[in-house]
Length: 241
Image (cartoon, one colour):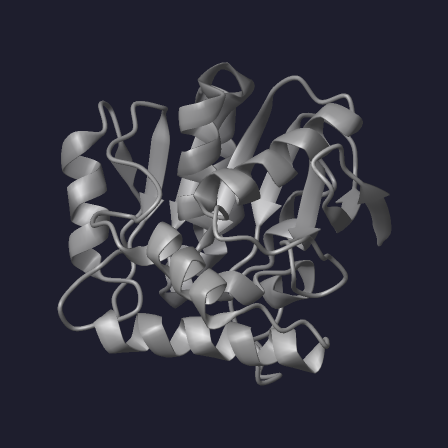
């Protein structure tokens, strides 16, 4: 892992493995999204899914990131923080690495990060794979609130104590809107790996498929057979974009 101090004041920990076309891989884990969560859950349990870093680093330059204020990354927390702040972190990292264009793969919260970056800099992203995208439903509202509070508790463990007013503003900026929280719609070439639980509602994936031109679905990606085809399916999509 390496670290970099970005122009916007974020100290970002990241990793680069392999060579070839660039692939920015945004890990699951909510606001605790960091590189290591591609392989296991926050509680240490193995994910039991294909690790894209291992799967693609022999043919792609795979970049993973600890998002701001988790893992080895930190940044000032202000009432203006929202999806754009996270997007700028990742875009400035690409700048620093000299990467003009790349593919992006995001899981869980990763699709929301990816879609915001695409909305800000559409010409930089050749394609996007959205794995288990999150989004607001009546059933997951309390889970989303609990997830935010879990992140707040980790801030306290890092001796970071934003005011309640700032935290309320950040939560509103991130999670008050519908759809995938970070954007209204997207027109970039998309491959959707649908979610199937309350945190990753199938309805959100279906809406993305309905609204994005030429979006494709990889429906059985979590099955044993689908996992065997995972790397080949995604690589074929990247090559066709």
